[in-house]
Each structure stands twice: as structure tokens, then as C-alpha cells.
Amino acid sequence: VQLQASGGGLVQAGGSLRLSCAASVRTFSSYSMGWFRQAPGKEREFVARISWSGGDTVYTDSVKGRFTISRDNAKNTLYLQMNSLKPDDTAVYYCVASRSRSSFYTYWRESAWDNWGQGTLVTVSS
Image (cartoon, rainbow, N blue to C red; front, side, top):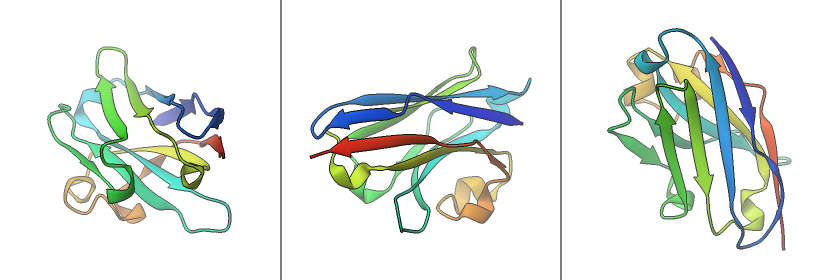
């Protein structure tokens, strides 16, 4: 599986961005998908996960109510709509994919995901 993230950039605090992740795989709809991020000088952390059907989503507490993860299985694309951005959201954002059970039950662990994109940088200025 090849994952290509895009949509990052520079935005002022309070602004919005939408990240996209295009997957080159014929069975996209069978994969759980997610987003992680890594801020400068910090460890990579889980952001959000969406089930293969899109019917189940999970978010880390710091983005609940501001970020929305979604997917379009017809277009093999994952999205992350980010609103009310804060300087603390500055990070490289990575999309991930997996068909393993661990990506559903222990989604917050990096080891649960066996496919990673290259990352896209989001910078939020104050």
C-alpha cells in the first residue's frame, strides 16, 4: 500500500486546513485508516482513526470537536478536516493504513499500523 498525504501548509491560529491521503491499493475499503502527528522535539502521537466502512471514528482528546476524519472509498482517499487550529497542532501529519485487528482495538499504538505515508507539514502561527 502506498499512501500520499497532502494539504499541509501555513495557517494562522483559528484557521482551517483539510489534509488528504491518497491510497494506491485496490482494496482500500478493507483498510482501517488513521492519522498520526509528530511535533518538533516530541514523540509521534495518535490523532484519529476511522473504520473500513467509515462508521466508527476515534479521536485523541486534544482534537475532539475540532478535527473530523472521513474517507471516500470510491476515491481511495482519506481526509482530515482541521478547524480552530492552534499553535500546538503544528506537526508533521502522517496517514496510516492497516487491515489488522490491532488497528481497530489498539489504534493509538504505532505498531498497530503497517502502512505509513510520507507526512505533510502543518504549521499554525499564533
